[in-house]
Image (cartoon, rainbow over all chains, first blue to last red):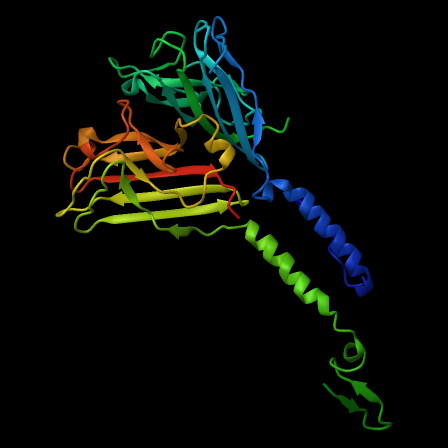
Length: 186
Length: 186
């Protein structure tokens, strides 16, 4: 049983039923959790934005980084965004974001971005130039991080979003992502 | 409910409706309580898909669907806050008028308020869609479905950087896709 519910046998007396039912109801309620309530707030976490060679800095003012998630047992649905603010630093190398929980994946994570699992979508947001806003793929960088894939305009290959590609980062630029995956309980 | 007697010494043999069962209390509360419990548990498992009235609008003036058009919206709620939606749009043939402005569709349940407000008026990626340009197949494209909190609608982010709009659509074009998001609706 997924939940250790009491299943009365033939010799159990009716008089024992209220207590057994009470135990079962409490165990079902605890297992389902408060997340069954529509009023339950979604979870929050602070994603970490790192760079392949040196870490970016978010900056101040309008700069921010936020993460959210909703769990259904071991299925994780997570959203997040970062936005550069005043005094930000673009860092160096590929942009990498941390996840709220470790991923359980049967598909090996690869350094080849064409072979690593894609677990979601993202939007690159260019505040000053709407035509530069573009869809991205969210790919596993590791079991705890994601990277963002985009398509080069001049070649039929995908590359990763970085400090220098595909835009020149400015204040209020950023990335908004959405991923879904199975959580590794270990 | 009744009795029978043995043929020789007339021993009374109550049937199953007699005796203990006849004198049992009726437990008036249990029936209603059990109905409440089973309804609560059943509502958690909304396994079947439901339909909702999908509307296709545009930012300035709405499109007019042509002959044979289709607007189909389906969704499932799991556990129960996660909404998984699927949609199909066929703009139709003769009589189609594209309207003016960015295209947008409605959602079956309210977006979680925390998530909707997480980044001001900026859009939130929630799914993917495929646009099939029936008149020029190479123009067909994959788009990211994004939630626009300012309009409380879903719009479509194109790879070229623009939001899918009336200028992209002609007779016989189609859009299909999916989205997922948490809701706080009961």
